[in-house]
Length: 115
Length: 116
Image (cartoon, rainbow over all chains, first blue to last red; front, side, top):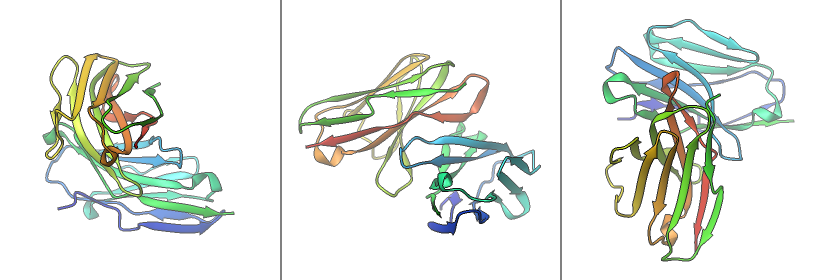
């Protein structure tokens, strides 16, 4: 079974629109970590955020915000006032303390921001 | 902080040759390094996990004699694709874990391998 599901394969938005990327995870561990990475066309994965399972506080960093809800096993990522430079593939990942913190990646969401 | 470099970024080689890819953690000591492979428009596929000074652990279906991994120091891991064939052409990405954050993996910029 897929541990991390990113149901949105591709999303296109017009510049300055807000966009939310969905991530649903599955785990039986009580201690786990959730991540978001950005992969621009150059290929390098850029670390955006890490949350642990004991901290459900939402986080905001500039135009980026993350909504972690254990009740729905979701860790969604919102970009406010999108810009062309936000165009990239975004990956959500899960690591579980019980499996040595190996990463389980979602299939990624390709975001295109149209000028 | 948490910078990982990878070299080379691009390599084109003839079928049958071996190719070595280096992964370095530049500003932290990486207790564990990971090697991934990524096909176009797909997610990352974990190939192997290596801990400094010990043998790498390969994922199911990954040939350890084909993809040799060495993690000789806390800042360097190498992946050697031996006797490369066209089907080995792919994007190879390494990541490193260590320093102050033992859960986060920091990724290198990747190496695009094309085997002719």
